[in-house]
Image (tube, rainbow, N blue to C red; front, side):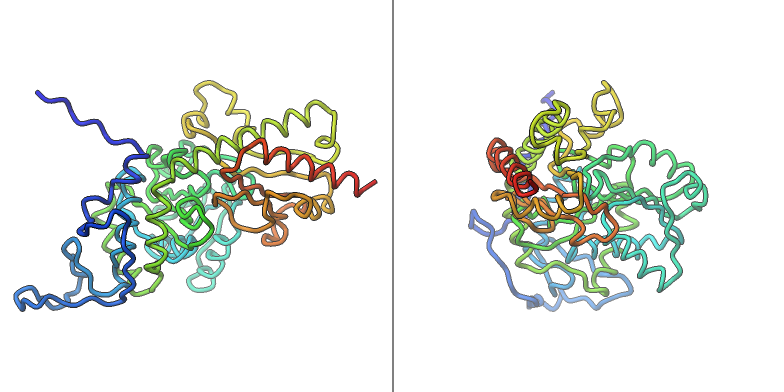
Length: 400
């Protein structure tokens, strides 16, 4: 009996998972910009629209608000990389979050801190239908009813700290709720939320799936056991709400996924080295770091990261993510440090090949004003270390 074929690696799938739908001779994917596509010339192939969305044959397109070649190829790759779960793409991460809530239609959503934009979507839905926003406190979780949603962001924006998916899965199961996860900060190969019973995984594809700071996209991946029930509805709602990705973004996404593992692995390793260096410098009590930096937040600094067999090590066995937070001693130091570094662009967003640093108060009014969010790129980590060091030294000299 022949051996069962070994599943291809993540790196290989990111390059070849879309081979089966490539009907052209081009090695590099072509860019299709058409918004509309000709119907078949054979009248026998023409069927009227029914109450349900028609299931199109592979490679068949009608109108790009429904599907298009570049976005379909992007979704095919993402499906392979996200545990062979069915994937739909959207115009942005927040568009994907909104689509998920429209589909699940909960009366209550339990959500922790994290990205303020998601809280903004919940506020809009509260205005429309009275949706109640709860916290993740035990008393609020007790209020959940069947069909409600527990939404976990892990690692958390902007600190890069992780949350225990097994813990929240058990609560969701007990309450007969849906568990949804925003895993933007831990793309493959760092985290597989479906391994912990999650119903829907969300990503802002703008970040690591795009990886070059030049495209907007959102991603929903549905647990395969729920696909037959949920995917047709999600597709129809995307069609009528219009939150689709553009064809250019689909093409850029395909290009970017080819190097996903290379980029994310390098970025996560760089971040870990920088965090370790900062923590070591701070603990030494010597030099400029302990004088100006109050603390460093990152999943690797959580107690569970040092515990063999802990939930955190099981959840993130391949690294703790490329984003961390610096808490400066003062708000003024946080405001001024980004102007002292040269290799870290002072900008919002994250996930690109270039390193970014952001005084987070510029875009998030809810966070500690001493916080700097650091998104680590693929540069040489020693260069990034030296740049941070000289920036801190310049800031110290300025304060004297």
